[in-house]
Every structure is written in structure tokens, then in C-alpha cells.
Image (cartoon, rainbow, N blue to C red; front, side, top):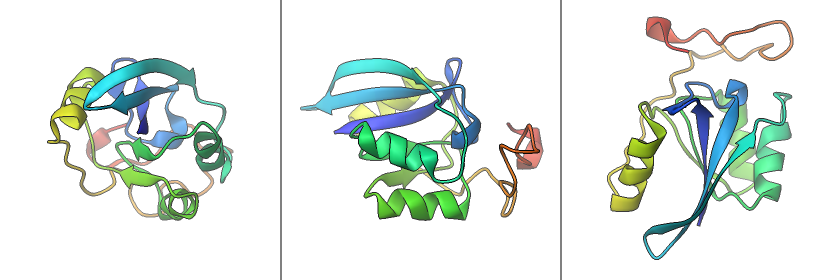
Length: 129
């Protein structure tokens, strides 16, 4: 299974579309067989779900994303796990031991509207980015 984690440094990025990179994992038999960092190709509506689908990704892990992005990932057959915070290495460990739990998206409804054109940041609650 190929998984992409929205990444900002060593942490899970709160908004998948604005993350500097994606940590790409290939997991077989409960072990990471391949790990790489792929720069974010750019935040344009619909582009990242297509890009990750072309990379063979089957699941995206992120702090949050808007409803439209969730729908686009669903259309490409990519599962979404949102509401994830913390260090990427900790999240990978949780994936491997089956304890990773998602939750509500960290992005407020409508926060992504116009995002990537005129907005520099998403409007996350509690000052999270």
C-alpha cells in the first residue's frame, strides 16, 4: 500500500494543499519498504488528488482538507485520514501498528475557498497551521 502524509518539516501539515512536501511510504507486510519526500507540486484545485493518484497513492494522511478535496480524493479511489497531528515518524509508527486514528478536519468549513490564489494561510481553529 502506498501512503502519502502531508508534511511540514518533521510534522504532519495541518492543510494538505499547503504542505511543503509529502512523505511517501510504500508498506508491505507491515513494514516500510520505501520512504521518500516528494515536494508539493502546487496547490491548484483538483491537481494534487490527480498527482497523488498518478503516483499510486492509496491513502492520504493530513491534518485537514476541504470538502471538495475530500470528494476529489474519493473520486480517484484515495482514502483520506484527517485530523492527524504530531510528528511524521510517530504517525508512521501508528500506521504500522494499526493505531492511527483520524478525526475531524483541522480546516474550518470554507477556509480553503480561494486558498492558493490570494490566501497565504488556511484559517485553522486554535491558531494551527
